[in-house]
Image 1 (spheres, helix red, strand yellow):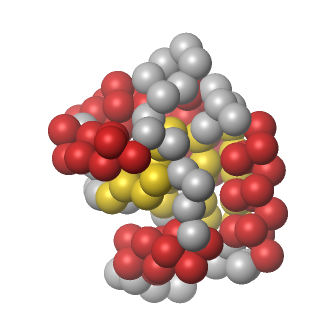
Image 2 (cartoon, helix red, strand yellow; image 1 turned 135 degrees about the horizontal axis):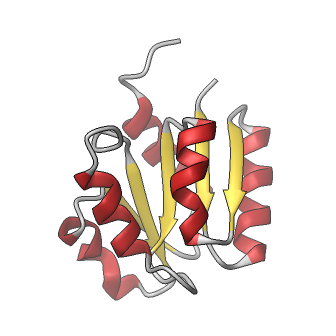
Length: 122
């Protein structure tokens, strides 16, 4: 079972993602606090992180850059997401693996997960 961490300061998005991903068989942890992402990655060891671009407190782009600069987490797939679809290219600047705009189509979301985790064997 793939493990997914979702970091977003919108409780509605967190609830929707947790329900939808759990129903698809993923093990899911969520947090509205960007600064918790690092400790949650350490303790939960996700296979994939969904990371909102704009977070209150710590910016998602900064979190992504730090994760990609760390030798322990540099290969962790990160999918950035934002309601601001003009941010589509932001994932390139912080070395994220992909981007999805909100609101998102669930089939597109599942396809992106499958693409980013297809190399992980259980």
